[in-house]
Image 1 (tube, one colour):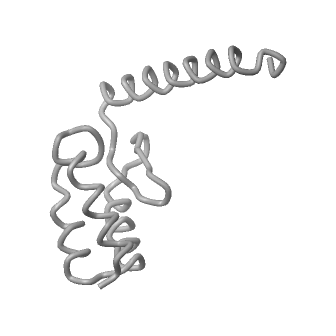
Image 2 (spheres, rainbow, N blue to C red; image 1 turned 90 degrees about the vertical axis):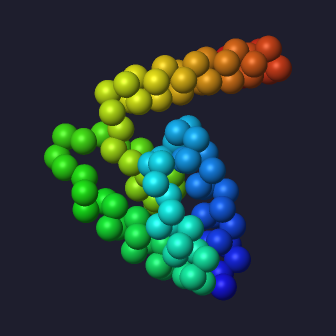
Length: 101
């Protein structure tokens, strides 16, 4: 059993199941990992998901993993929260190291 792949699947699935990120049906990912599949097998699964993408779709990626096709609402939220986090990080950096501005 590939410990890294299994650990990845176990940590990746709960947020997906709760709707935080990725598709809700992550059972296949856990099945692959529990069956002792390694990173190459998981990459094959990701490639299979990638084949469902159509021209014009906006997708989310995590490293090389195709997570899901984003809905317009998910894309708006992703843009909003990414911009918010960048503003917060930049504001904190300017307080910590004002000369870096």
